[in-house]
Length: 187
Image (tube, rainbow, N blue to C red; front, side, top):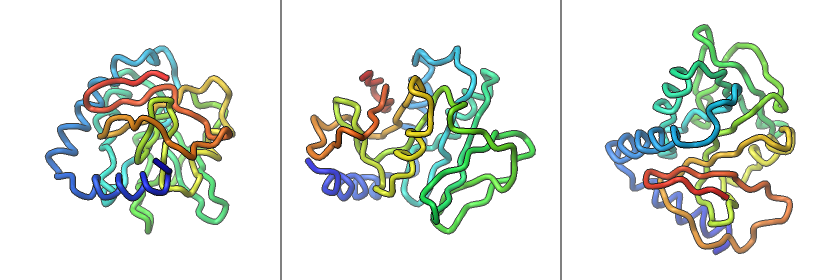
């Protein structure tokens, strides 16, 4: 299936999810994430969910990262330049939901993309080769192109893998892992 079709299908699927489903499956994803081979790393980029899009609730994963004393980095979107700026999450970080429903830091210490060791990223769909479909704006593609080559890219999804994304492009940067409520995919 093509990216455009997958976006429509998975946006519709996510719109049908109940709050209980999101909570239970977000907890399952956080619990499975503990099995990932990434816990010796230090700098973890984590997305904060857009609630109205029924994204994976990463607050449970955030607690895992905090419990392991990791540096947690969150982003602020620049819709003019289609770019993200990254900030260290601390007790002093103030968050504000922007007009697109994205919780973002108001202040903080900026962290360059090349400092990231692990990136947990949102997606609408993914395939068995690690290709992902996002919302189509290209924020994460640009972000990943700024990161070091060995950064570990982990998708989080309520749904299992598609067989293939027909129009995946050779310049798309594939995932290394994707965690669903049922399993960890390794690519």
